[in-house]
Amino acid sequence: MKSTSAASTFADRRQFLRQVAGLALLAPALNAHAADVFTRVAEPVQPPDFALEDSAGKTWRCSALKGKVVVINFWATWCPPCRRELPSLEVMYKAVAAKGVVVLGINAGESWDQVAAFAADFKPPLTFPLLLDKAGSVMRDWQIKALPTTYALGRDGRIALRALGGRDFSQPDALQDVTALTSQ
Image 1 (cartoon, rainbow, N blue to C red):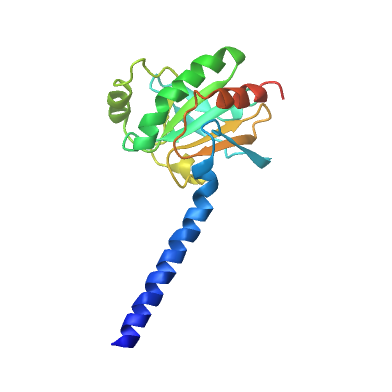
Image 2: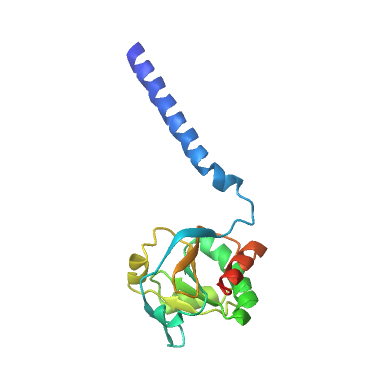
């Protein structure tokens, strides 16, 4: 009986240490300032191209946007952090569109009916283009592992910034980071 208790205590300690180690790994994120929205990509890479339609039937190609700064947000209607961050993405869009920045929201495999009903609930409305990745091929090609995920591409078409998880894109540093890409 004593050995079972000792083994149980040892297992409890190991579990505790794993949890503490996990918290230590999360500490930088937990202690990050609210202004830390984007992370700069150490080695900018060319993302896979895509061709997706918006609700009006216009086809958007990543490669056709080279020369512009492009913010691409991967999201879904069932994703609570996505729901929370989309209004701030609209704020960003309105703040940077005049500088030639394109903001695209790529929905993760839902129908236009679902997306339209979801988008209709936002006041003010979402005015940046929403695109459907019906088959999930763009998410696979871009290796999206979690929603929401946001990338900012520089004028050279390479991924320069990323934001994994829900963010507030209306933060001054996010607007500054994206605007800075327009002068590079």
